[in-house]
Amino acid sequence: MVKKKYTYLLMVIPAFVIFFTFHTYPALQGIFYSFTDYKGYGNWDFVGFKNYLNVFQDDRALSAYGFTFQFAITATILVNIISLLVALGLNANIKFRKTLRATYFLPFILSVLIVGYIFKFMFTHLLPDFGKALGIEFLSSNILGNPDLAWIGIVLLAVWQSAAFNTLLYLAGLSTIENELYEAADIDGAGSWKKFWKITFPLIAPFFTINMVVAMKNFLMAFDQIVALTGGGPGQATESISLLIYRGGFEGGEFAYQSANAVVYFIVIVVISLIQLRVLERREVK
Image (cartoon, rainbow, N blue to C red; front, side, top):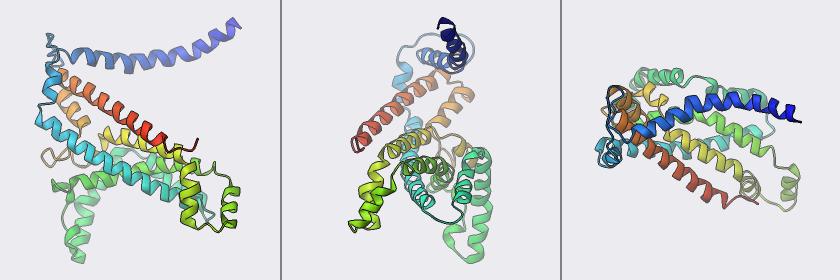
């Protein structure tokens, strides 16, 4: 019995050591430096909560928070609507169902940067040329160069790539619903919408909760999509919090200040996730 326990410990300890070394320790180090004036090199002194107070007075940080929340909320809603619709279609008894499922999952296994550069080419060259040829004014300009429209391009990329994973979770949820429930609803004369609203949606509520929380968390941490498409521009119109922390911390000599920003943002994400879980779990079928 004792030997068996040691075997399990040997299986778990390496993963724990790696996680602590490359995740927990750097995080604790970042929290420590957030109370200093460390620039990423040289000497440092303790400054107390000065960095944290400055975050709330930084117009650039507040602008990044505004863009990030606008992007994350829009993308979370869109990706869940699209994923649920696709999952319902793929769960139906249609031809080429397995092929279509594999096709819809392809975007998820592609690198975000590669997909991002493809989308950038489409927005920069393909769509404007297409719009000019057909005389469609809306498509004739590069939206990534427009401070008011660039965020829409990032939303389209993020939703297109994330929909695959969310669809997979919804398909898992739909597979748990027994057909007898739909057959009973048919006998009672229930229509398609009533069956969805009264049977399908309540029974996949736990999967809806997971998708909403995971999607919101991922979109709040958006980085690769923005780097590939706009680099945070035009100007700073699409600069997310993650991009601001990276640039300021590693390129701008603001390691301590951006560490404080990262701690604040971590707390914000945790609070939002807890609120989502508390609200969405109330409507789940127990």
